[in-house]
Length: 391
Image (tube, rainbow, N blue to C red; front, side, top):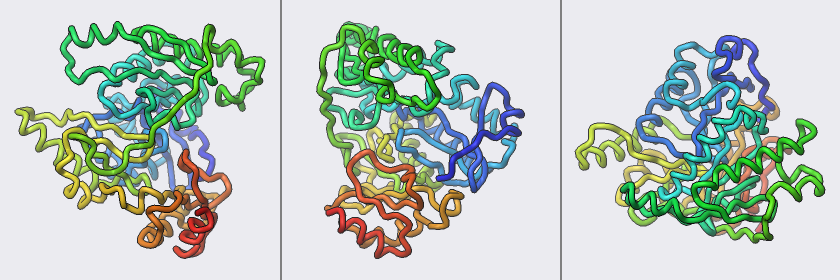
């Protein structure tokens, strides 16, 4: 992917609100979806905006967030207003402080919300680098395998949201983990404790190339989490496509959420809301860091979402096959990486190692797990060969 550069004309048109970036195929905006939590109605509106103003496919990122690409530069005022109305860009100063990843369990929503609200309430935290990553996870949660800087780990709340149940649950504890050490705090204090680590990181940071805690010198990392004890992080596996209890995990091939996919989600969410006597598409959907979505109560709707373009079975080739944006979206390469990945999909070994198709050595969008890389392949056979070499 080409290195995006701030669009001065776009920024001038929307000072303090939304800063677009420009790549080979036009302007791009990153939407802020903390912990991947988004409702079906908002997702439908995002898809409508993408189709009206740019590339109709929404890009699902490896941080569980969303991007709109191929937009005009400068951004149309109507688009800026619509994104702001959806609450997807909190403020100009905090435009880059979007990186909160979370396990998809509904019982962690309270911690995601608290972390997000306290992050946005502190203007100083707007100085966090765009690569700085906060995580909210259950013990042994799969999101712990991601390259986070500070994590809040706690048992999920019970599903009921009655005030007395939530009040009692908040009296429990959580662990805040950073740089291999952890402290145990009350659940209510977890977000503040995690953000104190972020503030200490900013105080110790001496240059703009220091992106993450691990970039600090050893002598500057010892005081990031006062009172911390050594902690071994154990991460579970990401949820496989298919039913997960009453819910459905639906993988988004190549991380491109098409209008047909969003329409499929609308139909599933709409029918479920209708059966519960509601006329609003307020169903919570979680966008995961593994380029999938978790749809509550949709375990029996796998065939419908598969017909819309999702991968809803564990034996899908898209469980092992990914690609960077490639040409024509990226000016660094002429390799049409996504097209080659689609051509290779029927031939890759689903039981083999993951393989990531890339157009240059930057390896943008690569999965966090071990994987093979197919650099500038010329055909599908090159992609398959790269996977076999890794096996």
